[in-house]
Every structure is written in C-alpha cells, then in structure tokens.
Amino acid sequence: QVQLVESGGGLVQAGGSLRLSCVASGRTFSNYIMGWFRQPPGKEREFVSAISRTGGTTYDSDSVKGRFTISRDNAKNTVYLQMNSLKPEDTAVYYCAASQYSGTVRSRQEDFSSWGQGTQVTVSS
Image 1 (cartoon, rainbow, N blue to C red):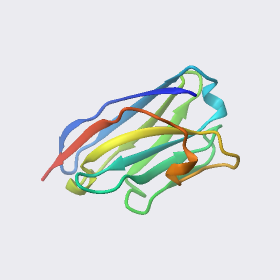
Image 2 (image 1 turned 180 degrees about the horizontal axis):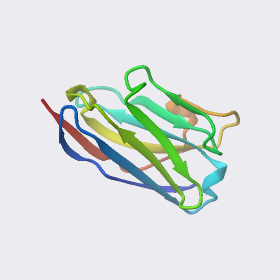
Image 3 (image 1 turned 90 degrees about the vertical axis):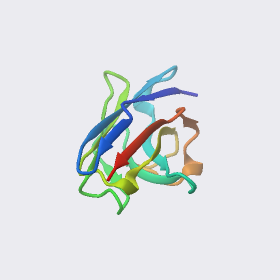
Image 4 (image 1 turned 60 degrees about the vertical axis):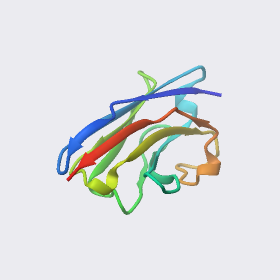
C-alpha cells in the first residue's frame, strides 16, 4: 500500500483560504485515484473531492463545489486541496486517501484502501 502524509491544516477565519497537501510514498503514485475526505466534529467522515490518475478528471461534493479545487502533481507524488471561501461548517479533520479501483474517480470510502493520518482545519466565524 501507499503511505500518505497530509499537511497544511490550521486555523483560519471565515472567508479565508488554505491549501492542503498530501505526499505519497511507497508505491507508484500515478497508479492511484486520489481523494480527500473530512470528518467534522461529532459527525461521520464524508467525501470531499477526488481526482483521476492523470489529473484530467475531478469530482467534488456539492458542499464544496466552486470553493475547493483538487489537483495533483505526479512528478512530486503529491495531491493538493485548495480551499477558498472557507466556512465554519468546513471545520473538520481532513484525510487524503488512495484508491486502486478501476474507473476514473471514486467517492465511496470503501473504495479507498490507503489513508493518511489527517490534518485539522478549523474555520472561525
């Protein structure tokens, strides 16, 4: 399995921006569909965004569409999540995940076999 390490979380005011990064190691990064998930306090983990192996296709949840952008750099083994216009309800632990399933993108947690440790994002009002 690929190992994943997230960074870039922190405390930001509503309306601000953050960029999360996730560096992969151990396997060929470009073989994996990559995704971002989040777990708000007291809630279940939920899908945020996913990106295809080449980066040519992305898929976002309705709650972040138009505000968050997922991207990847296969030469750097890194996937990013640019988060703009942040809202207090975006407060969560954010996880990156890797999937070897077939297809272009995935959004179900059970399709992702490797997970990072998570990074906290807190948006103050």
